[in-house]
Image 1 (tube, one colour):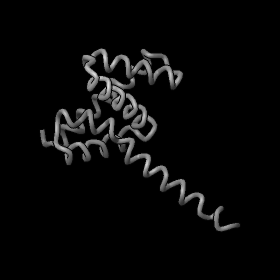
Image 2 (spheres, rainbow, N blue to C red):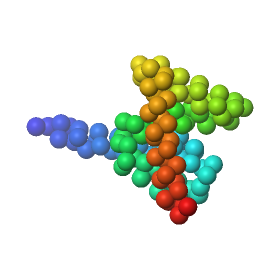
Image 3 (spheres, rainbow, N blue to C red):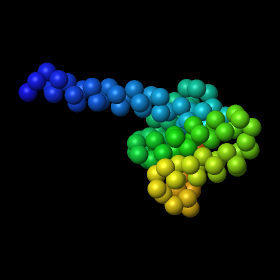
Length: 119
């Protein structure tokens, strides 16, 4: 086994962790409207442990797009619907199925925020 081959799993793990740190931007940005950065970090960790990385990444992608759209002046509803439609198309998921899942994730996220803020 070469040095490169032995290092590959470690390099992949580092790349995934770096991606995870950046990936939490959408989730944290949505939380920032409701809580402090510390509470949002707590809520992100709790959400990730509850829903798993695949759903977390999906929610994070939609959240990042949603926040960007709102910054450009779209309403909350229009921004969320457009971000969700984009994610559904990219993932090959039916929009209604995606909306059902993100509603569940959103409820879990709000519960995590409440727990982390002591509400």
